[in-house]
Length: 324
Image (cartoon, rainbow, N blue to C red; front, top):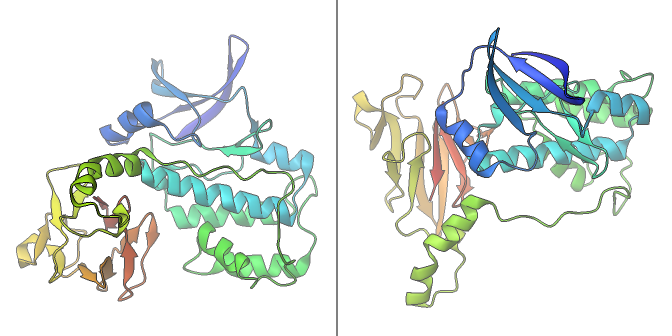
């Protein structure tokens, strides 16, 4: 993706061009239910081929904002939170977070509402974990007009967290929450950002409506996310591909090896993952696959069960499914 600033009729845009490389469903999902964290865009054909205009006239580049306002621990924590929530929101809208552009020069901030806005690339995807590491490494240092976090003890702690193989923004936030960060004040509160109420995403809302009539019939009060009867992992690109959640469990692997459920994909391992019920909940376990099993964009540790709920995105290599 090649990006450059441009002014059209007095308004600022970021113009991106290159070879389009997005599945068709991505653009349809953005148009029909665009997450609030993404910048609006328009697609048009220019002299250099197909191009995308991202409207940036209402926003400031994150790098420029940091150069003017500096960086401290509170802002660093808030950016962690913004990135974590953005990744979660994209997965809930069936948009692969690997296409989020994680560069401070291409991330924007709404100065009025004090929240980040991200570009969702239609041209390429990148390894999400490494992109996050690069982003937080850059904003942690004194790279913006001499500004940076001057607390060396904190910087050392943050650098160690970022360097870990299992680093994610949400994991670092969780460590921070449990006071593993040195000298972290008790009852840490951000004074410049009001807590926004959590929104019910369209997938969660759809699931609630789908099962609403069943609840009325049997008068159950158990939350939708805890019911396991008749559940499937449904393919995102092909809704006809469904993996049932069976009481006895299902092993997922390559078709030719006749696993319990086979997938025609060379990236899928011989016995890639195991889907099963336990104590009324649904779990997924990566069985040591080379290309990994992912839950909402986070790679699972091998042979380590993870509980999943309706609306979660599970990926086997690059095969994406939603639990519904």
